[in-house]
Image 1: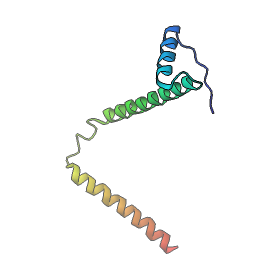
Image 2: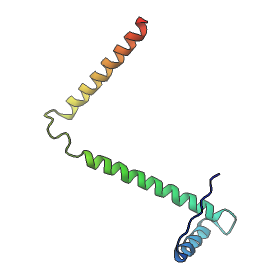
Image 3: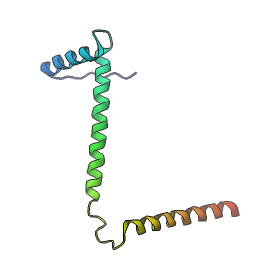
Image 4: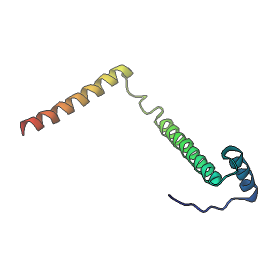
Amino acid sequence: MGELKIKISDDVERAFRKMAMRKFGYKKGAISGASQEAIEEWMLSSESDQKGQFWDSLEGVMKSVNKKSVKLQHEAWKGIAEKHSIKHKKKNDN
């Protein structure tokens, strides 16, 4: 199990301990459980923020393409199918 040593302000520490004890009880492991939960939630929210930034950067990239989305999907799947059949054919020829 990993271990972290962090420094936070006294006010944040007091508030965090109070919330941890309220949620996890006044027992051994309450602070660790609350810390793990807080870090996991932070990581998940950071990941979703990054995904949002990724999609935001793609906005408008395909404005110059004069095809409908369904047509693009069909072309993409056709390319994937052709690529797969070529690999499959090469594998069977050997």
